[in-house]
Image 1: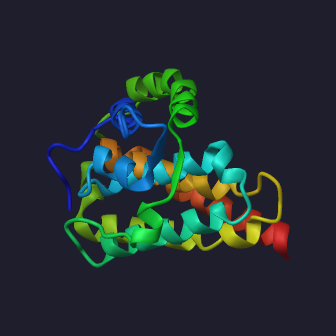
Image 2 (image 1 turned 90 degrees about the horizontal axis):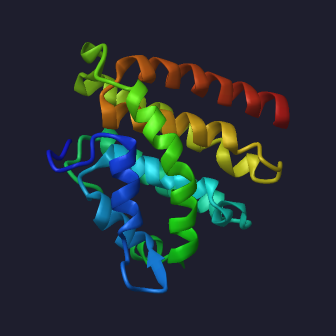
Length: 196
């Protein structure tokens, strides 16, 4: 379920994503996925979360589409697939490449700080059963995104939880994974308070 060539920290993920579609005006989801690595479930889930934080994530319908994509990717991790598959209509979605790179440029200084803090800890957490359970939690959190789309900025909490899970998978930081569980609980509470 892992790729030895996959990026192992946040800055490397961002560098690979930023290099996608080099020389073109727009960058497609397919180009981003190929740049990051099609066996790299953690980086792909992180990139989906990052796209949700870009201006594209504010376009009506896009958060729901990203959530469905995340559910599809995480679902394949749950069933133990070695590499993920996405439908063509998702892979063909594109955005302005320079705008995408600009957002990544804003995130990179934060990424460097995060990478200095994270390290391999609590390795026993990363048994296949945990990884699949974490993917299930990401699916449950992603399901909350569509109803939150009508509430400005409410989707930030679930996407943050998913991003932390993804980052924990990338860096194999078990302590961060535990934090991700706590944030996921917070996402569930947010949905309860906002929608009920």
